[in-house]
Length: 286
Image (cartoon, rainbow, N blue to C red; front, side):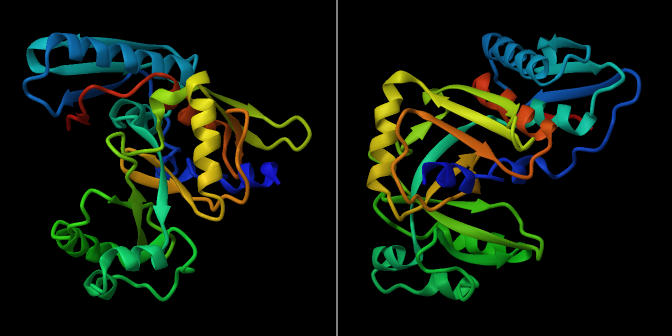
């Protein structure tokens, strides 16, 4: 049964990285990124450069050069021929903030709203199963309207909202994430000991193995036990990647995530997961 649960998580990393993995870099492609914080300290800029270097090295053995430009709060990366430029750009701009949240399903969230149905009127709520984590969906152009309304919802710090990845029909689904006291999330990326990309020898399926740190092993087991028949959302950079419904507790602090991934996709997620969260965000300089 636990193997099935792990397989349910299949595909959660795909949404964040499937937006373009096919843009090979020409010889010595240059990427210039800049901190979104104009007051970034030299220490934070140096820390970010270290994280970027570790991500790129873990993802690929292809050569690159990285240079910090402190006066402009910029970092320049020169990629040798053989790099996929889109993957490199994602590794240089994703914050790398990983969290695991228990969720409200539509029924429990309705009780939390105490009869206020205005949010549901803004969402397409007829599709999701009421026992699942999705509380409703919206067409991409309507997301901002929903976001404006969400700013007015007062739930006494009981939940936060996060959108999933756009589906093939252009809709985006909304999740209500349970807040667990001051920490908020059940577990975060700091609780992860390691993530390893690999391939199942028997099936040839690409997989990602996640192992939690020793202090978090029991926390994870307890969290999954409390949420049997509920969904736990895996959230990366405030986007819900996947929210499987648990059918059993996950003991031992390890899980194997398999699905229709390419090797590049599982290596990408491992590179983000293993090398820490950026102290500030960065953007590509056009």
